[in-house]
Length: 102
View 1: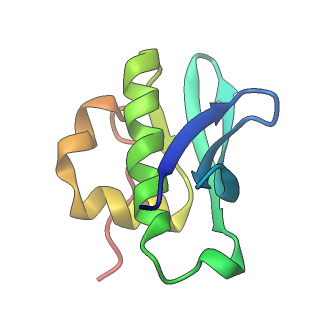
View 2: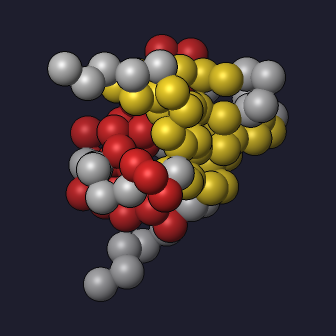
View 3: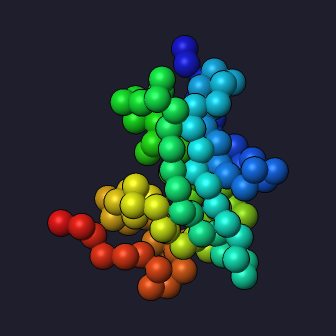
């Protein structure tokens, strides 16, 4: 069975997704005035097409919620995820979610 985990890699300022202990992708963040800005998400090519991007964003948002730091979504993938999953609105900086691209 495949083990998937999302961890906060504070040294590299990113949330990292690991598959069976191996790096599979990351969601970069910048801490600005107590807020977590999320500018870029990437999944390594060999792990593409498995839904790991969504798993990474979900895990990162859960870790951000646990840290108590509000989130500013900047990455288009994160923005799209948040429009599909409104249960995360409570951890966003008010007014920081751009409109959906329809």
